[in-house]
Image 1 (cartoon, rainbow, N blue to C red):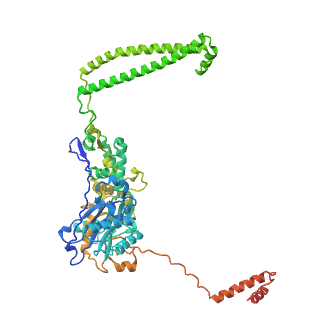
Image 2: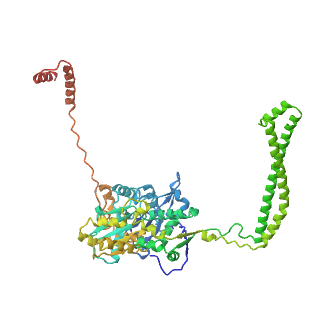
Image 3: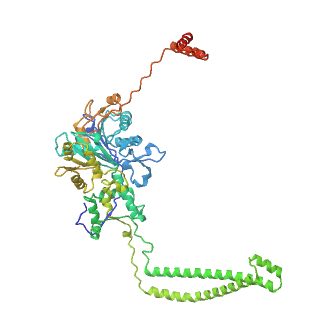
Length: 603
């Protein structure tokens, strides 16, 4: 929410954080003995988090945290690819950035392989031979079987890992926070998860995901950042280059908030006092050196006088050139008139044709006009010579006066006033129509999902509404969901909304805790061994409390072909058909008996 007891003028600046390359860690001995510790990879569409699932205190947080992007120019070698934190400034290479995701589903497995190489190398593993550690990786809710098959093929065939486990990030966060709150298992609730590319509503019934009633909303953090960039670029067309997508993501994370009542909050912003108190002024970087800013008043006046003298000289030169041209043309016309006075009519008419004139009267009118123009030009030249002294006197009088000119505030010109944009961008999660998306908002989708259950199941689900994901970190998000639920639910019904402890990191912590409680072994719940992969296929999934539901791929059985007849019978039929063709060339038989005799004869 917007605060009330803050100073009148709030000026902030962009951090423009530039990442430094991740160190290459040594492989810890605790992760090798007595058994190989699992590697937990939260494969997020915005950031990738990787670390060890080991009980030691030094492994309580992910070792690696970087953006899920790769930058490689066309035709470059794999060794020249920059991954995650190796890219110091994303904006310089924005046009080269590639991600393994389409929405929230992994589709580009070449980039995924590069990111896995980066993870294993920086964790101290050599991926040239094989990775002898179990891998626990997050995947999208209701992940397509083909995508899981390609991921399993990459892990088992390329890296030769012994075990793999897949789970949903929102369910891992739900699992971790329920353990922190000491809730009795199995848990029932509904998860509202909003990440970078899309948001999900995941109902959990008796500790398992109800995949049939899970829904996705294609609005999340990336759409909010693009919307904010579009709003500010329309508002400040002079700073288009400074309003970058990376800065908009920073602005969204640090300065935005979710309004409990959107329309009421907009009405507050109409008040000038509220606006001055709550608007955030974002200072853009600029150079304080203004052209002429360090020049004294005398020097500026001298320069102004020089410019005026230069303009006067230019005007005088132009008048002289114009006077000279008119004088030359007048002399030529007078020479033609002299031909008429001397009686040289042939030469006179020839000269008139060259001048494109018809008669002597027209020639005389042109001569009169040019004589008048030449006289006026000479008078202007004389007047300009006398005006130079007067102009110098005026300049001296002007310089003696003290003229006050307000100074141009360069710093204020390079400020972005972020007002209603602070709440309009998170609002697209509840009203996607603000950005032109023709789909339901998060709470409308939640109402649709709840309507698919019985009233008793609805009570159990809304008693544990869980918010997680990086896009749920806006202040006021929990209060907004509670207000919307109060309007959706029946009178005097009860519900409880809980926010994840660390919405952006709890998925990794939940996956680590699950891996510690369920060691990898052949036949263990949630783990896929190499034998399972070879026998059941790459799309196989071993279900557990934080995983998707495995729906086997049903292949339509082909219709069995009719058995082929023996070759001898085929030759007999061929001969019979040839004979029948010969017989049918004759007149057709008159009765069924005759046709039977013909067939017998043919055989």
